[in-house]
Image (cartoon, rainbow, N blue to C red; front, side):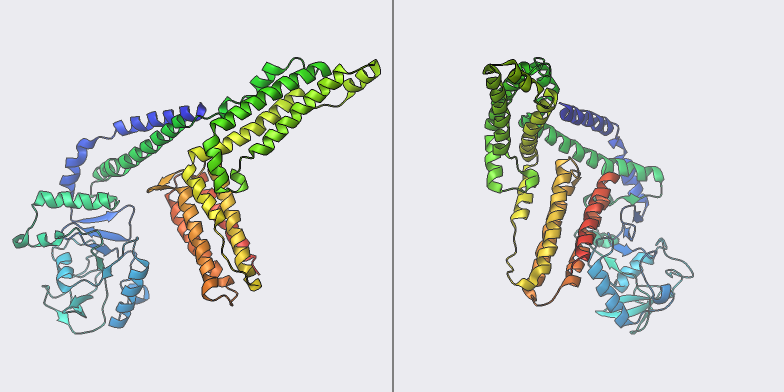
Amino acid sequence: MSELNDLLRQKETLASQLSRIDESGVDKILNAIKRQRWFFFKNKPKVLFDRDTALLWANLKYFPYGKNDNNDYYSPDEILRLMESTNSRGIDSFKNWRVPTNFKLWTMIADGTFPFQSGINRRIQDRDFWCVTYKGNFRRKDLDISGATNGILNRGNCFVIPCSSAVAPKDYEQNVSPANKVYSDKEKILMTLNVFTTNGLEPIFSDATITELFRQIYIVKPEVQRQLTEIQQQIERLNEVELLSPKLDWLALKTKFDLGADKSPVRYAASLKNFTEHLLAKFDEYTADKADALTELQRLSPPNELVPDVKLVRKELDSFRDDALSLEDALIRTASLRRLAELHDQVRPPFEVVVETLTEKVRGVLLKVEFFELQADFVREACAAFELKFDFRAEFLKQLHLADRAAKNFLVELVRYVKAGHLQTKIGDNTAARIALAQLQNYREAVANLFRTSPNDPHKSEILTQAEVLQNNFAEVIGALDDESERRRLSNLIRQLQAELNDLP
């Protein structure tokens, strides 16, 4: 089976890649952490990390630490608003940002290693006055005056750099003072490493070889292991599910049952009768084997893209078998050469075309059942999405129905992508397809809620706002996909939805 062989080859390649990752470099990484206080991150460029305190600080290359392109001081009220907006949007997905206390700011800059220190004394970005929290209030600290408690001036204008304890372990900062040590130096270095790995951070070391070593051991290796686990699960599913569709080879069936069908109507009737009876028997056998899956699919009431129409296909196979029997009967009853000539001259499709067409009809049923068996969770969630209806009966809610129709068209396309084997990349605990499906459902429910809260308004702008939220959520999923064609597929989906919504009245 080609799919199984492909998975086995992928597994072998990943296992080989995993074996080449040398974990003996962990000690080198720990020694590098010991020698380096400040860390920037490849995957979180807008923050930097202080090994001594485990605090995150805003990267001043990105953060507006002053007004007017960082040339002017903020007032205390402006700093308050800046912090509120910073916590609302976050910095590189981290929240809980605050103005540092005078002690934290001084601890940060006292040894002169802070990457953004420049100018005289302990200045940051060659700026003197920086905001601190002192006795519960905003104050400005003059960095030209040494000491945590010296140079604290009353409320006034200043620059600001926020910090966050978002990744800091409990009691970590108590080790700042030798008198308050809770952990040994080695324990603290291990805690720092754990901060990096548990938060998915990719630190940049002063030694580029250590940066790459960290990436291989703590970024590449877990991802390879995740892919191996996913492939193993797919292999196990394939081994659990008996895939019948690959066994349907129309060319082999044509070779087996073609008795010279296109040479005479007698052989055509015999070939067609034998082939259709064989295919009917196999179809009944296949559907009996897949009875449990077919029963659940019928209960789920899936969209047309997922419906295996067993009754229709069997009826069509019966019809072709009846045609074969009718032709055979007509030939047996032929009483004149003229009638035989008429039967001979009748236009019939080539036997090869009949075999290929009917085989593909049966395969179409099997593929849908097998898709359900291999992607049962996604199909169940997609069916639930199609079944979800919002009960708004008023005529003026036409916009809601149009918007939801656009979303369902989106869902149909998503199902088609998954049926074609796309968007199966794992992101966290789920596939890209299932995350996209959940986000679409959130969008539909948000739009419906607009009409629940104020049903008398047109709401087009609010619908487009919710679509923009969906688009932003999709952007995160798209960014996590490595395959360019996969990113393009999701991008096309969201553009189609946006185009339909822009056409709303």
